[in-house]
Amino acid sequence: MPHTDRFLSPERFEELRTVRALEPHRIAEALATRVRRPLLSQAGRLFIVAADHPARGALAVGSEPLAMADRYDLLDRLALALSRPGVDGVLGTPDIIDDLALLGALDGKVVVGSMNRGGLRGAAFEYDDRFTGYDIPAIVRDGLDFAKTLLRVNLTDPGTADTLEANARAVSAAAAARIPIMLEPFMSEWRDGKAANVLDADSVITSVAIASGLGNSSVYTWMKLPVVDDMERVMAATTLPTLLLGGDRTTDPDATYAAWERALGLPGVRGLVVGRTLIHPPDGDVVTAVDTAASLVHAPTAA
Image (cartoon, rainbow, N blue to C red; front, side, top):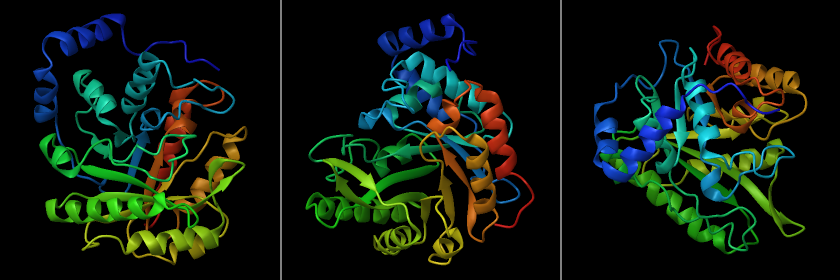
């Protein structure tokens, strides 16, 4: 269902376009002067909305192939989500983060820079997931709080080797810069010519073991993991702080929320990173979807 009630005015977007064309230096100024905050809440929790999908050519949500194609609609949804209490921050590529900075939506928020978007959705080279977004020096330059990488491990695709090495270098660089970095690992495979992640506990555990050992230090490494059956075993596989990813939108939001709630109560789980499921909920009600997820993250549970 479309999101019809705009949160941002047309004038805000007109100003955004003007600044980008005539005064682009103001983007760096907006990032440099934004109000910073601690990474975690006082209860040690974190709730991030994600919007790095478009840069990988992944614009679909559910049965809508171009749901995330309208940049103004996407920014409006993100700004609305970030205005809600309990939403701690946003994950995005530089184009998204720069726009949100100019719109003044990043004050008091945790900002996560997405690093590798080169494994374009549907490409023959999808597993050769080049680092085409942020790098660690740029994250430091812009004063961002967190880095994020995607690590899909396909044991039959040679592109995985370069991706593993690139992720390892990113982890090492993040540790040297004292920047937390979340790795989103999957065991993955080709199915009918398409890249598909294997979402059972054994496969997730294997991916965690591979990702956890990357880089020359694990001091600043976090995991970003899917919610699967038998999450207790998954979380027993790592001592690293972990955020849960939301996955694709489903037709049964209540079941999704219930699965998140159970997983959020497990030791080591610190919160959620969710994108399309909340930014494009089935009923179009972004506020209710975001507020529901925030209430689950920030409920009084042990991490």
